[in-house]
Length: 560
Image 1 (cartoon, one colour):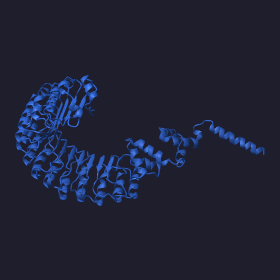
Image 2: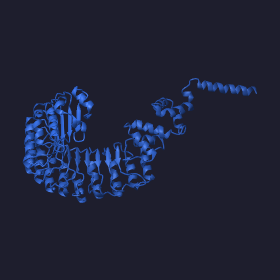
Image 3: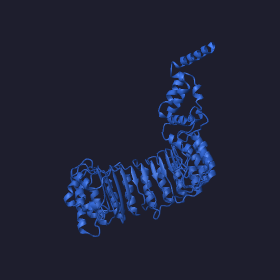
């Protein structure tokens, strides 16, 4: 992680001294009076000639109130940046000077700084001149240096968007590309498709969130993904007000998942109107896909009906699925969808993370669905069911508790609000969860309890203390130690009570038990009681002393 410094008198002095401790500088030049008062015409060398500065983030900087003098000072700062050759990550957001002027000033930076790896520009209004100068700057930049580009532009026309994408074609080492270009034209979609089809492209991640695509754009992207063998991650989170992709477009796009040449491993299409036909097409493609690891179809705005989800799960069964994470939050799945989901999820033997928050389930539906956790092929580690109303009842919690008895993979079962004062859960339901985590009836039952589950809700403040304790012990991530602590804490917590089980152990087993008890401070109280109860094990003279004392008492009695 980057440790950002902010401009002040001390950091300015460090920059002047080329201090190696200042590697990342972040400034909001509208809110920071100190940065505005610096004479960058005079102090610019502390940036331009600095050899240790690696990251620079500039936010909200430009002519404030139309002050030309301030504008000249800002431009002096950019000229200083243009002289720098060490910066690897440059980020500029909400800059108020004319965007074209900024790119013109920075032109030497892009041309001569071969260390530049990441370039981000956020929330800028782009006119045709600014677009032309950005394209020129990208063409000057070394085609082997850039790895990450993120652009967020407003007011960009279709031709300008296409020109920007075309300018990226020469950057063969580009790995991550994020574009929010506020444009719904066909030209730039075709340019994107050509970029993906470029045999020299090494692009691995593409984020097109909040762009306005239509069915033609979705089809063009899907066809390109089917042939591209480098792209691993794609995100197109819907723009609620502008998305015009219908089921027809999603059907065409989904075919890329059925193509064995596609390399997609992560796909995020949340907040889009997928529709029943689109959902069925995705399911059919998933049935033969062996590469996709993450799928997010959350918040489809109820464009997929309950019947559509049943079809989705019936068609998506795939014993060779590589899917590890499935996000279906905020949909219209319902109880019948849950029932059809169960065999589909059982067939996905790699699934580790499942999110079903904000759906239309009922308590009986969840009781049936809890059987997923019983299945021997289930390897779920995280399962979310929050914000489904007050559907989590005692019966549901008890069903999940029983299902968890033999489950050794689930670490998080997020059930939402388990406060007995606000939900449908009483002490009986919480006791069932506590018991499955620590069954205190015997040492064996504690040892065989669930030592994997670590989280069941956001807040543990309203949970019983014994349940919280077991969850915390499980967070040790060492099942053997969790079992040991639970046995020491719960089974032998009452002094000498239950100590008889240890006293009756065979002598050859006893040393191992003693070592197990005294491994750390947790077992010291029990070890102390054991020593007191069986001193003969620890003091070689104790038995002789005991026998001697007995013989003396016998002689005294005889004399009397």
